[in-house]
Length: 374
Image (tube, rainbow, N blue to C red):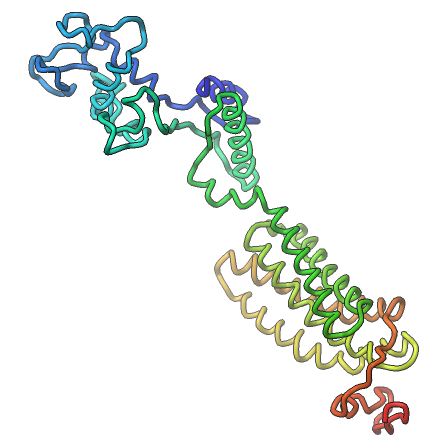
């Protein structure tokens, strides 16, 4: 049965994270009906429920003295008619020292209620409980890994019970609502990063006109994300929904660092080394002053926050992002362009772009426009 499987799981608590067997309303209900507990199931002479605390002259339900055969037990299990009669009494009975098995408080919310069922609980009058809940306890959980593993083990156990019994069984606890996201975190991260990489490749190709340049840009941007994840491990930043959101945002920010330099490289003449030098000279200052420094100033403000979530997931992560994106854009990207940069794009520049590019970064005075570009 389900309760036996939960009890077996509780016996290996260190690995199952289940501390005790589940509290069973059906077991306590049958105990409550037992005539040996003569202060539990009691009724008045008109066969209505007599509360435990009542001092009136009440009789025990199933002691065999009632003229009504309904109140005669045949075996240890009640019939459907006996359940229909007494299950509402059990749910209304208040536990006391005279009868600790009473169900109110502990079990009166464990069955699905129904306004159309005579008993007040869905399916009970037909001999089939529509939905029921069984309470259990986890072992003490201290770390994030404990909570995630406990949820995984609970899902594994209920899946086994569902397969064995042919009914739907699922676990629930207050902390499951938050930690359930971690069960699919790898999937969400894979989808997010894959979609971002494809988007960078497609959009960069449309604007740069070179699949080679777009692929190189995508590779550098995704390497920034990978390095940020490595720094997260070093700094003890947990991988969760907040950090995944920050990683997704870092893809767009890292692209902003790289795309301008790649664009400048693709419109310059000369060898790869020369073109990389020119691209870095032309776009280095705008990228550093306009992107890196402005973002760094904004991130440093977060260092004044006294809230842990801002310190860990925003100040630390965004500081790492700015530093790594700057290093990738000014160190790694130029090296890759010198080694495996794309060829110069064949299209001609517009007149305003010609004016912007009409100077030699190594000479102070402007140079004349090459005749090939006129």
